[in-house]
Length: 313
Image (cartoon, rainbow, N blue to C red; front, side, top):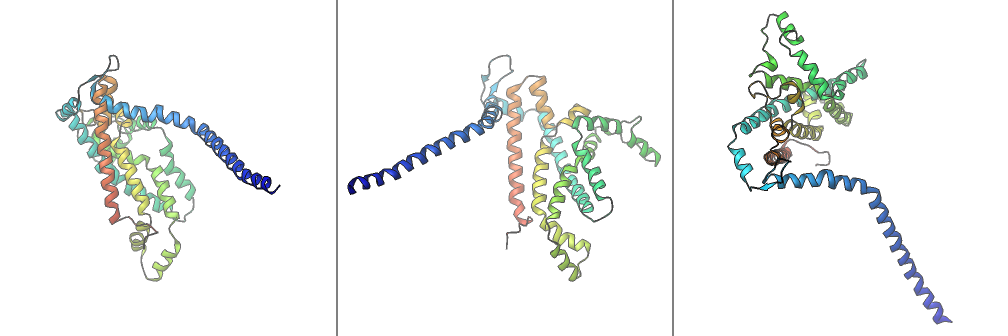
């Protein structure tokens, strides 16, 4: 009798283990079923195009015929393509001026909107509204503003006795015009800065006021260091976006005049979908990917000298 009781006692843990394993297996299957739409979408619309573009960059491919392996010829041809280097120059020019200006303007607006003044919600809404306007619609609006015949900006300049620069129709002014337009949509960045400013402890400001620090000193010594991780995030996102600048140039200038606004992404689009040079365009895309990766890594590594995290001692 005692022997049978001991056997039953040994079987119970085994049954429990088997039940737990079966339950764990069912939970795993259920979990995979729930995330399967995302997994399928990722494999079909992200990973496969990513790897396919790498393969096509080593081929001569025009969609109509089968890809032909040509090795590094696409990359070699890019190195001898004057328009490729010109588009890269235009993109770097836009990035070098647009990202710092957007950062300064967005941070300045966020500091103003963080003040306790009457009608603050209205001001915040006004500055954020341009961020939700579609790029195509805002581009059409700015085409009218930059029009040399009846545009608002030229009319304003003539009213104060200044010459009209020609804006989108001038080789020298088309890139500054697009940079000026980029400041129109900083509202989304302003919201991120506002969230960072709300997280700065008021005790730090009170202590600084007791020590006799003025508003400028408080901004430089407290506000900027405390939101420096937010600044780093916005700078990196701004860099990535500026290297892929496309929609506004495509709608407003088509790369003109005289290729002065032929940006990298626009030239890539033309090679891929106008000339059907898919292999050539894939090589351009991978060079752009490497360029963005290198710049992002350099900025991130250099951030250790100016970014402060609250957990640091």
